[in-house]
Length: 208
Image 1 (cartoon, rainbow, N blue to C red):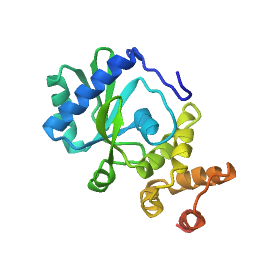
Image 2: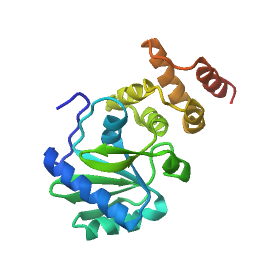
Image 3: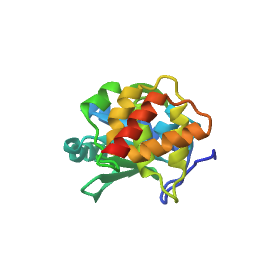
Image 4: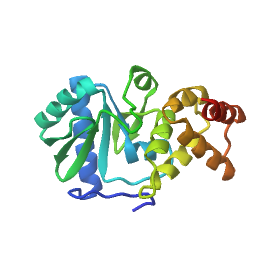
């Protein structure tokens, strides 16, 4: 498995099974016209560094979450309301689907995130992937001692030359200190970050 790989209890890590379940889940959402984006390890792999993940993370709007879970159940998944505040789960062929409708930092899927999400081919399926700017913010927020992969996932995304820095700064309002810390660390690793972005974030953190 590649660096950053994670496994989950109840998941086999079988790539063929993962691809088949992924296709089924995405297809079910598309047919039901449920707005969603791919997040998590698969999104990190699609947008940044090579990454291995044995589960599927789909991000939906809170008002869509109950229907999305129902759609997955009808598609042959075993489902559960894991935490009514932010997370449902679905399982098929020992592959776990995390259905999230709130991320750390009180981040929700919204129309602007959807508008900016682009189609990528992941495990042979066309899927809408969260914008890299939003994923950077989420990864900066959820990073902790036990999950350093999130920090390095975010650093890989910072190296992208197509980042919309104005949009990133707008989204960073949810956690400006975390994002500033990430970007300062990126600079210490000789990664390019616009000086104006650093100044704006620093001013926000120091004078808020």
